[in-house]
Image 1 (tube, rainbow, N blue to C red):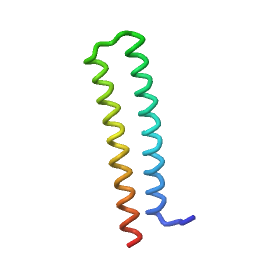
Image 2: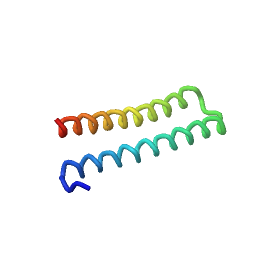
Image 3: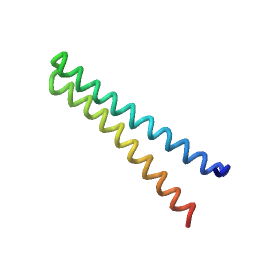
Length: 75
């Protein structure tokens, strides 16, 4: 295992991305369940869908930045 500070920072960012992805997925499942259970309006359900979409977009952006940083370190 490398002790390079850049590698540790990238690993930390990867863990954060994984936690955000898992939390967003659980949040979205909970929001869908709550919307069905308590008969929320479509507008409210769309709001929670947009929040989940923002969480997944964050994960995608962070993952892309990690990939680009590793590409730069190798070359």
